Length: 340
Image 1 (cartoon, rainbow, N blue to C red):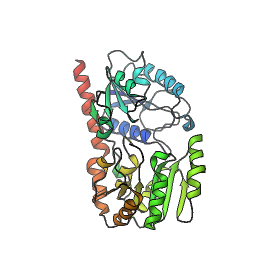
Image 2 (cartoon, helix red, strand yellow):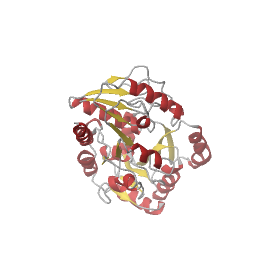
Image 3 (cartoon, one colour):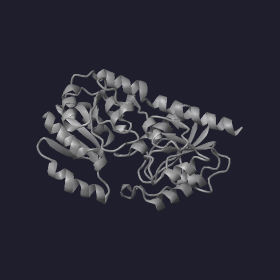
Protein backbone atom coordinates (compact mmCIF):
# COMPACT_ATOMS: atom_id res chain seq x y z
CA UNK A 1 0.00 0.00 0.00
CA UNK A 2 0.92 3.64 -0.39
CA UNK A 3 -0.39 5.33 2.74
CA UNK A 4 -0.79 9.03 3.39
CA UNK A 5 -0.33 10.06 7.02
CA UNK A 6 -1.41 13.53 8.14
CA UNK A 7 -0.04 14.84 11.44
CA UNK A 8 -1.10 18.05 13.20
CA UNK A 9 0.86 21.10 12.00
CA UNK A 10 2.37 22.41 15.24
CA UNK A 11 5.00 19.91 16.48
CA UNK A 12 7.56 17.95 14.42
CA UNK A 13 7.34 14.18 13.99
CA UNK A 14 8.92 12.77 16.07
CA UNK A 15 8.62 15.52 18.70
CA UNK A 16 11.80 16.88 20.26
CA UNK A 17 10.12 16.75 23.68
CA UNK A 18 6.37 16.94 24.43
CA UNK A 19 4.03 15.52 21.78
CA UNK A 20 2.10 12.32 22.42
CA UNK A 21 0.18 12.41 19.13
CA UNK A 22 3.35 13.13 17.15
CA UNK A 23 5.16 10.27 18.92
CA UNK A 24 2.39 7.86 17.94
CA UNK A 25 2.41 9.04 14.32
CA UNK A 26 6.19 8.55 14.19
CA UNK A 27 5.92 5.02 15.60
CA UNK A 28 3.10 4.18 13.17
CA UNK A 29 4.92 5.62 10.14
CA UNK A 30 8.11 3.70 10.94
CA UNK A 31 6.16 0.51 11.55
CA UNK A 32 4.22 0.78 8.30
CA UNK A 33 7.45 1.39 6.38
CA UNK A 34 9.13 -1.56 8.11
CA UNK A 35 6.19 -3.71 7.01
CA UNK A 36 6.97 -2.90 3.38
CA UNK A 37 4.48 -0.09 2.72
CA UNK A 38 5.20 3.33 1.21
CA UNK A 39 4.36 6.20 3.56
CA UNK A 40 3.88 9.87 2.66
CA UNK A 41 3.83 12.05 5.76
CA UNK A 42 2.41 15.57 6.05
CA UNK A 43 3.85 17.08 9.23
CA UNK A 44 5.32 20.24 10.68
CA UNK A 45 8.70 21.57 9.59
CA UNK A 46 11.66 19.95 11.29
CA UNK A 47 10.11 16.47 11.13
CA UNK A 48 12.79 13.80 10.87
CA UNK A 49 10.65 10.66 10.64
CA UNK A 50 12.46 8.57 7.95
CA UNK A 51 9.63 8.36 5.39
CA UNK A 52 8.69 10.50 2.38
CA UNK A 53 7.32 13.90 3.40
CA UNK A 54 5.01 16.45 1.84
CA UNK A 55 7.19 19.45 0.90
CA UNK A 56 6.65 22.97 2.19
CA UNK A 57 5.10 22.26 5.59
CA UNK A 58 4.17 25.07 7.99
CA UNK A 59 6.70 26.25 10.54
CA UNK A 60 6.41 24.27 13.75
CA UNK A 61 5.05 26.50 16.52
CA UNK A 62 3.89 24.74 19.66
CA UNK A 63 2.48 27.96 21.10
CA UNK A 64 -0.23 27.90 18.39
CA UNK A 65 -1.57 24.41 19.14
CA UNK A 66 -5.26 24.30 18.28
CA UNK A 67 -5.18 27.26 15.87
CA UNK A 68 -7.86 26.54 13.25
CA UNK A 69 -6.24 28.48 10.42
CA UNK A 70 -3.00 26.54 10.82
CA UNK A 71 -4.86 23.25 10.65
CA UNK A 72 -6.96 24.22 7.65
CA UNK A 73 -3.94 25.44 5.65
CA UNK A 74 -2.08 22.26 6.56
CA UNK A 75 -5.01 20.15 5.34
CA UNK A 76 -5.07 21.93 1.98
CA UNK A 77 -1.38 21.21 1.35
CA UNK A 78 -1.56 17.66 2.70
CA UNK A 79 -4.48 16.50 0.59
CA UNK A 80 -3.16 18.20 -2.55
CA UNK A 81 -0.03 16.06 -2.27
CA UNK A 82 -1.86 12.79 -1.64
CA UNK A 83 -3.79 12.26 -4.87
CA UNK A 84 -1.83 9.07 -5.64
CA UNK A 85 -2.06 7.24 -2.30
CA UNK A 86 -4.26 4.21 -1.65
CA UNK A 87 -5.51 5.41 1.73
CA UNK A 88 -5.17 8.50 3.93
CA UNK A 89 -4.93 8.35 7.70
CA UNK A 90 -5.60 11.82 9.10
CA UNK A 91 -4.79 12.81 12.67
CA UNK A 92 -6.31 16.30 12.53
CA UNK A 93 -9.85 17.42 13.19
CA UNK A 94 -10.26 19.63 10.11
CA UNK A 95 -8.70 17.42 7.44
CA UNK A 96 -11.35 14.70 7.09
CA UNK A 97 -13.98 17.40 6.49
CA UNK A 98 -11.99 19.08 3.71
CA UNK A 99 -14.19 19.16 0.58
CA UNK A 100 -11.33 18.65 -1.89
CA UNK A 101 -9.92 15.48 -0.43
CA UNK A 102 -9.11 12.85 -3.13
CA UNK A 103 -12.28 11.22 -4.45
CA UNK A 104 -12.55 7.48 -3.96
CA UNK A 105 -9.67 7.33 -1.47
CA UNK A 106 -10.61 5.82 1.90
CA UNK A 107 -10.02 8.19 4.81
CA UNK A 108 -9.24 7.06 8.34
CA UNK A 109 -9.30 9.56 11.21
CA UNK A 110 -7.99 8.98 14.73
CA UNK A 111 -9.87 10.90 17.41
CA UNK A 112 -7.07 12.11 19.67
CA UNK A 113 -9.40 14.52 21.47
CA UNK A 114 -12.13 13.53 23.92
CA UNK A 115 -15.59 13.39 22.41
CA UNK A 116 -17.35 16.45 23.81
CA UNK A 117 -20.44 18.57 23.34
CA UNK A 118 -18.30 20.94 21.24
CA UNK A 119 -17.06 18.35 18.76
CA UNK A 120 -19.77 15.67 18.88
CA UNK A 121 -21.60 16.93 15.79
CA UNK A 122 -18.29 17.31 13.95
CA UNK A 123 -17.29 13.69 14.49
CA UNK A 124 -20.83 12.49 13.80
CA UNK A 125 -20.75 14.20 10.39
CA UNK A 126 -17.21 12.99 9.76
CA UNK A 127 -18.19 9.37 10.39
CA UNK A 128 -20.58 9.35 7.41
CA UNK A 129 -17.65 8.91 5.02
CA UNK A 130 -14.61 8.47 7.27
CA UNK A 131 -13.53 5.50 9.39
CA UNK A 132 -13.15 6.81 12.94
CA UNK A 133 -10.59 5.24 15.27
CA UNK A 134 -11.02 5.72 19.01
CA UNK A 135 -7.93 5.31 21.18
CA UNK A 136 -9.66 3.73 24.18
CA UNK A 137 -12.90 1.93 24.92
CA UNK A 138 -13.77 4.61 27.46
CA UNK A 139 -13.43 7.30 24.81
CA UNK A 140 -15.63 5.32 22.40
CA UNK A 141 -18.26 4.72 25.08
CA UNK A 142 -18.64 8.46 25.70
CA UNK A 143 -20.12 8.98 22.21
CA UNK A 144 -22.54 6.15 21.38
CA UNK A 145 -24.11 8.19 18.55
CA UNK A 146 -20.77 8.39 16.70
CA UNK A 147 -19.92 5.41 14.51
CA UNK A 148 -16.56 4.11 15.70
CA UNK A 149 -14.89 1.75 13.24
CA UNK A 150 -12.14 0.54 15.59
CA UNK A 151 -10.71 1.02 19.04
CA UNK A 152 -6.92 0.87 18.76
CA UNK A 153 -4.80 1.51 21.82
CA UNK A 154 -1.56 3.39 21.29
CA UNK A 155 1.69 1.47 21.27
CA UNK A 156 5.34 2.10 22.03
CA UNK A 157 8.62 0.75 20.70
CA UNK A 158 9.59 -0.98 23.92
CA UNK A 159 12.94 -2.14 22.51
CA UNK A 160 14.08 1.49 22.37
CA UNK A 161 13.12 2.13 26.02
CA UNK A 162 15.73 1.28 28.68
CA UNK A 163 14.50 -0.74 31.65
CA UNK A 164 15.01 1.26 34.83
CA UNK A 165 15.82 0.01 38.32
CA UNK A 166 13.44 2.35 40.16
CA UNK A 167 16.25 3.17 42.58
CA UNK A 168 16.08 6.97 42.47
CA UNK A 169 14.14 7.33 45.70
CA UNK A 170 11.48 9.57 44.16
CA UNK A 171 8.12 9.50 42.40
CA UNK A 172 7.59 11.43 39.18
CA UNK A 173 4.92 13.31 37.25
CA UNK A 174 4.95 13.59 33.47
CA UNK A 175 2.54 15.66 31.38
CA UNK A 176 1.66 19.29 30.81
CA UNK A 177 0.69 22.26 32.93
CA UNK A 178 -3.06 21.84 32.98
CA UNK A 179 -5.57 21.42 35.83
CA UNK A 180 -6.90 18.21 34.30
CA UNK A 181 -3.55 16.48 34.71
CA UNK A 182 -3.81 16.56 38.50
CA UNK A 183 -0.43 18.02 39.37
CA UNK A 184 -1.57 19.62 42.68
CA UNK A 185 -3.02 16.24 43.64
CA UNK A 186 0.27 14.57 42.70
CA UNK A 187 2.18 16.99 44.92
CA UNK A 188 -0.20 16.40 47.84
CA UNK A 189 0.06 12.64 47.32
CA UNK A 190 3.86 12.63 47.29
CA UNK A 191 4.02 14.70 50.46
CA UNK A 192 1.56 12.40 52.23
CA UNK A 193 3.71 9.45 51.17
CA UNK A 194 6.85 11.35 52.24
CA UNK A 195 8.40 10.63 48.85
CA UNK A 196 10.16 13.36 46.83
CA UNK A 197 8.44 14.29 43.57
CA UNK A 198 10.14 15.25 40.32
CA UNK A 199 7.97 16.98 37.72
CA UNK A 200 8.54 17.05 33.96
CA UNK A 201 5.88 19.07 32.20
CA UNK A 202 5.32 20.92 28.94
CA UNK A 203 4.57 24.64 29.28
CA UNK A 204 4.02 26.46 25.95
CA UNK A 205 0.86 28.53 26.06
CA UNK A 206 0.05 31.65 28.08
CA UNK A 207 -2.58 29.65 29.99
CA UNK A 208 0.00 27.02 30.95
CA UNK A 209 2.46 29.65 32.15
CA UNK A 210 -0.27 31.35 34.16
CA UNK A 211 -1.36 28.07 35.74
CA UNK A 212 2.24 27.30 36.70
CA UNK A 213 2.84 30.74 38.21
CA UNK A 214 -0.42 30.93 40.14
CA UNK A 215 -1.02 27.32 41.20
CA UNK A 216 2.07 25.14 40.89
CA UNK A 217 5.06 27.36 41.69
CA UNK A 218 3.81 28.12 45.23
CA UNK A 219 3.65 24.37 45.92
CA UNK A 220 7.28 23.66 44.99
CA UNK A 221 9.96 23.08 47.62
CA UNK A 222 13.00 20.96 48.43
CA UNK A 223 10.86 17.83 48.14
CA UNK A 224 9.02 18.86 44.95
CA UNK A 225 11.17 19.82 41.96
CA UNK A 226 10.07 21.10 38.55
CA UNK A 227 12.55 19.94 35.91
CA UNK A 228 10.95 21.66 32.92
CA UNK A 229 10.22 19.81 29.68
CA UNK A 230 12.49 16.82 29.00
CA UNK A 231 13.63 15.24 25.75
CA UNK A 232 12.90 11.55 25.16
CA UNK A 233 16.18 10.22 26.57
CA UNK A 234 15.96 12.26 29.77
CA UNK A 235 12.28 11.40 30.13
CA UNK A 236 13.03 7.68 30.18
CA UNK A 237 15.85 8.20 32.68
CA UNK A 238 13.39 10.05 34.94
CA UNK A 239 10.72 7.36 34.59
CA UNK A 240 13.17 4.49 35.00
CA UNK A 241 14.57 5.83 38.25
CA UNK A 242 11.17 6.48 39.77
CA UNK A 243 9.39 4.28 42.30
CA UNK A 244 6.12 5.19 40.58
CA UNK A 245 4.58 7.50 38.01
CA UNK A 246 1.95 9.65 39.71
CA UNK A 247 -0.95 10.26 37.33
CA UNK A 248 -3.92 11.47 39.42
CA UNK A 249 -6.00 12.57 36.44
CA UNK A 250 -8.85 15.00 37.05
CA UNK A 251 -10.31 14.57 33.57
CA UNK A 252 -11.22 11.67 31.29
CA UNK A 253 -8.05 11.50 29.22
CA UNK A 254 -8.70 9.44 26.06
CA UNK A 255 -5.34 7.66 26.33
CA UNK A 256 -2.36 8.19 28.60
CA UNK A 257 0.93 7.83 26.70
CA UNK A 258 2.89 8.65 29.86
CA UNK A 259 1.43 5.55 31.50
CA UNK A 260 2.62 3.10 28.85
CA UNK A 261 5.98 4.86 28.66
CA UNK A 262 6.29 4.37 32.41
CA UNK A 263 5.37 0.68 32.18
CA UNK A 264 7.96 0.22 29.42
CA UNK A 265 10.68 1.39 31.83
CA UNK A 266 9.36 -1.04 34.45
CA UNK A 267 7.87 1.70 36.62
CA UNK A 268 4.39 1.12 38.10
CA UNK A 269 1.64 3.71 37.58
CA UNK A 270 -0.43 5.18 40.42
CA UNK A 271 -3.50 6.83 38.92
CA UNK A 272 -7.13 7.75 39.44
CA UNK A 273 -10.06 5.88 37.86
CA UNK A 274 -10.39 8.34 34.97
CA UNK A 275 -10.51 7.93 31.22
CA UNK A 276 -8.31 5.15 29.84
CA UNK A 277 -6.43 4.48 33.08
CA UNK A 278 -8.36 1.26 33.93
CA UNK A 279 -7.54 -0.07 30.44
CA UNK A 280 -3.82 0.50 30.97
CA UNK A 281 -3.15 -0.15 34.67
CA UNK A 282 -3.73 -3.61 36.13
CA UNK A 283 -4.51 -2.82 39.75
CA UNK A 284 -2.09 -4.50 42.12
CA UNK A 285 0.08 -5.80 39.26
CA UNK A 286 1.36 -2.86 37.18
CA UNK A 287 0.23 -0.13 39.55
CA UNK A 288 -2.76 1.05 41.53
CA UNK A 289 -5.98 2.91 40.81
CA UNK A 290 -7.24 5.00 43.70
CA UNK A 291 -9.54 8.00 44.22
CA UNK A 292 -8.03 10.42 46.76
CA UNK A 293 -4.54 11.68 47.68
CA UNK A 294 -4.46 9.68 50.96
CA UNK A 295 -5.32 6.49 49.07
CA UNK A 296 -2.89 7.38 46.30
CA UNK A 297 -0.15 7.99 48.89
CA UNK A 298 -0.60 4.48 50.30
CA UNK A 299 -0.41 3.17 46.74
CA UNK A 300 2.86 5.01 46.06
CA UNK A 301 4.43 3.29 49.06
CA UNK A 302 3.05 -0.09 47.98
CA UNK A 303 4.24 0.42 44.39
CA UNK A 304 7.82 -0.19 45.52
CA UNK A 305 6.90 -3.84 46.17
CA UNK A 306 5.49 -4.51 42.67
CA UNK A 307 7.38 -6.56 40.10
CA UNK A 308 8.93 -4.13 37.61
CA UNK A 309 9.33 -7.00 35.18
CA UNK A 310 5.55 -7.38 35.08
CA UNK A 311 5.23 -3.70 34.17
CA UNK A 312 7.67 -4.12 31.30
CA UNK A 313 5.93 -7.29 30.09
CA UNK A 314 2.56 -5.51 30.11
CA UNK A 315 3.99 -2.82 27.83
CA UNK A 316 5.49 -5.46 25.53
CA UNK A 317 2.38 -7.66 25.42
CA UNK A 318 -0.43 -5.10 25.27
CA UNK A 319 1.04 -1.78 24.18
CA UNK A 320 3.71 -2.66 21.65
CA UNK A 321 4.31 -0.79 18.42
CA UNK A 322 3.97 -4.08 16.53
CA UNK A 323 0.47 -4.68 17.85
CA UNK A 324 -0.60 -1.10 17.09
CA UNK A 325 0.76 -1.23 13.53
CA UNK A 326 -0.84 -4.61 12.84
CA UNK A 327 -4.25 -3.40 13.99
CA UNK A 328 -4.02 -0.32 11.77
CA UNK A 329 -2.99 -2.41 8.78
CA UNK A 330 -5.93 -4.77 9.32
CA UNK A 331 -8.30 -1.80 9.21
CA UNK A 332 -6.64 -0.29 6.14
CA UNK A 333 -6.90 -3.59 4.26
CA UNK A 334 -10.54 -3.96 5.27
CA UNK A 335 -11.40 -0.50 3.96
CA UNK A 336 -9.57 -1.05 0.67
CA UNK A 337 -11.36 -4.37 0.20
CA UNK A 338 -14.68 -2.57 0.61
CA UNK A 339 -13.72 -0.22 -2.23
CA UNK A 340 -13.52 -3.09 -4.73
